[in-house]
Image 1: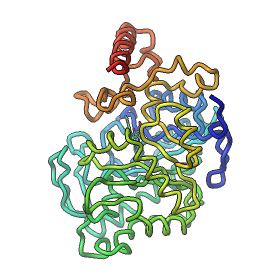
Image 2: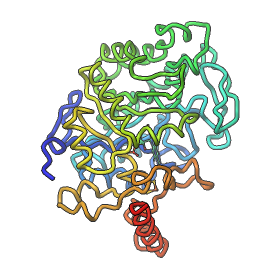
Image 3: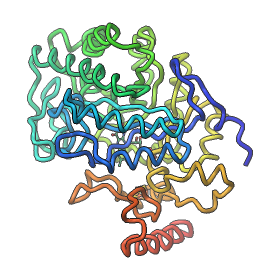
Image 4: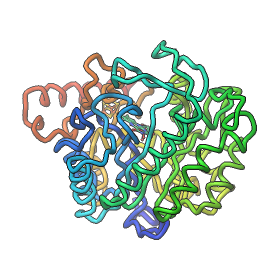
Length: 396
Ligand SMILES: Cc1cc2nc3c(=O)[nH]c(=O)nc-3n(C[C@H](O)[C@H](O)[C@H](O)COP(=O)(O)O)c2cc1C
Ligand code: SF4
């Protein structure tokens, strides 16, 4: 296939990205116990950059240890060790000519004290059905503290060489919980009207703009929460206007919360995620990244041609085969290890570590990132399993 758009550089914010391929945010649960960067984290993301991904998003870096999903997620802290690790990570991505993004999160009411070791908090009382623990409702002084944590975390991370910081406002995490009337039932200055529900975001951006260039900020936004009182793109028109007015660089469109995860995959398969980004493109002049269920570079090219987004992101296709872009450039698409979940919805979830008993992140395909496992016996077994399963799925 001839590629007209995928390999064309694009300006995002003030940076040039060498192609239109984004490694969507993926958290690995492989940071050190103190949230600092491990060699495994560096090896995963730098391998994507080495294999020609233009924009590499490091997933799920929490603003504090209290905001982590799991103990082994990355968190940002002002210590020599944390800063050194983040610098090494951004450099290891940029050395290959990719741009580096750090996604900034707080788990909010979807946290689990058993995994993070911390109490869980949210704008209002909420029990995520997956977790079954009611969160504590944040006091105003605690919200102010979290706002400061966001600004401090980004200010620290900015000094470590990342090109962009992606504020996570989707998937039911804390900022999303404040934005959505489904999870925000507060009666004070942080709840009720849009002005109040947007307050946490406005306060963060107002303080952030004194410290960093807002054209380094990207937004992960929810295309649809799959809940009547939740959010979708049209309900977020005014939020998008507000974010545009601050001068953010880009939006990357996703969907669902933990509670509605079962609706995500079928909507992805039906191409609805790409429709949400198309809808968003009509509301903003900022860069839009489409993603969700993209299984090949040629599929990405088609979506760019259809104006579903300016760039496209892939998470599982790159977990299944981090060399997918390199193989495409070398006309070796036939050698790509396809993600089983992209062939058939629900066929494989091994990489979704929150669903695994041991919370360990791995993939069934033989080229998954762990270099030390590449030649082991279990990898050979995995290769056979993958070969048989993909044949079965394709013939079913
Ligand atoms: C193992 C794993 C970890 C993920 N971690 C994050 C994350 O930290 N932040 C986020 O916004 N999305 C995360 N996602 C969601 C992906 O970015 C992506 O939106 C989703 O997998 C759908 O895209 P895909 O079909 O290309 O995989 C994760 C997905 C997987 C499979
Ligand atoms: S573990 Fe399964 S679902 Fe995840 S990337 Fe690999 S093949 Fe796809």
